[in-house]
Length: 93
Image (tube, rainbow, N blue to C red):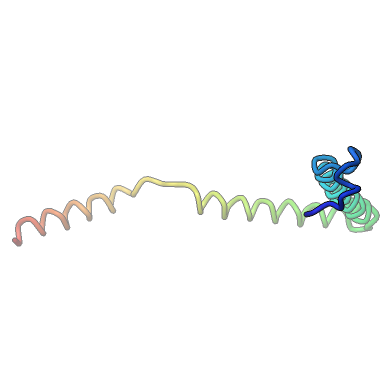
């Protein structure tokens, strides 16, 4: 972004001021949009059903996230099978 020469000399329009003003505008627009969405949801007549659906959706996402990121130890039978497979491999060579 290049400022015109008269803007560069004016302290009101330095780069930092413009960046901060732009960031503040983005934040305020996002907050305003979120508030409008929330107000629209609160005006709905089926708030209870909407809340239940939201909670069910969050639970499902939570289950998926835990399944994706949780590490579980192998079961006893898996360990035993790997041990048998390894010992057979050692004796067959």
